[in-house]
Length: 394
Ligand code: PLP
Image (cartoon, rainbow, N blue to C red; front, side):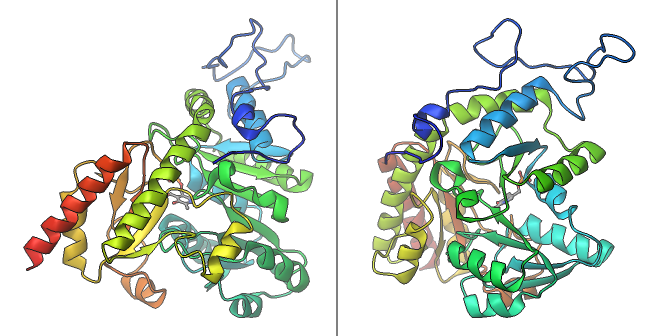
């Protein structure tokens, strides 16, 4: 996979990942230093420096934000303590009682946050299957304040037409802020700001950092007005990413290109392998003739490294998950190590069972986040787990 992007740089994205331009260090340090300081001294009572208090701004965080803005093709970028606080800062730009249209297969924590806003601030949320454009259009109102989309969704890997979502929203809800959660693809594969989204956010805990050693969130926009409002919220409640985490995220981003490329290559092979074992595999592009493949290819440069499989039996799925040796049983994804989980019992357990059933989230669903290990090792590990499940279920 070659990563090349059409943004205002003579370099490709692989190269840009390493060109950190926001480093303001006085000694020209090669690696952006960790400015582990809560405050910055003023020159005098009425003469401030560039930074005064880390809740408002910090040189390590600023360097990261400048770097990420470039990679996410944004004018402004803000990094926050995690992906959920990023969404929270975006939702806080909406007034009490706002109407929001959101996907029906959102990450469980996003769903929980929306429900909190319904309870505390009277938000009205319409959840729709965003693949169904008629249902999506019907859910929009002239006063809809925000549209929240994930594509592919987590964990069902539903692919919605992100271009049509923009077109329909602009026609039916002119003032709605279009927001995309791009965590599943990362800027390596997709840049939703290019398609007309107003805000893109990501959990930097996943592919951006890649090693599961930090929590982080990133918010990117080209709008000065939205940036002002998001920054106000971050500064007001102190959700900005800490200096040490900012340093680690800067470091993780440098290897994101090769990490995602290798993990994606492994995922393509594993998806085909699991399909050949008779399992139902949700993975973008697995069926080249499927209509959703063409839609997916219109906005992503590759399928990513996350898939989900349905076995038809909860116990069978549990045995597979617990029998693997190389796949860590973990709630997250986007890590260099391969991970395995059952969303209904883990990442999406915060969604009530009747709502999960109504939204078609099967209890036996297994989510796999493929890492950068040797793919033959991963295949034989999964094959072994499937064989154990078959034996125990006989
Ligand atoms: N968005 C998606 C798609 C996620 O899967 C997650 C977490 O799993 C989040 C956002 C939240 O990110 P964080 O865990 O960093 O708060």
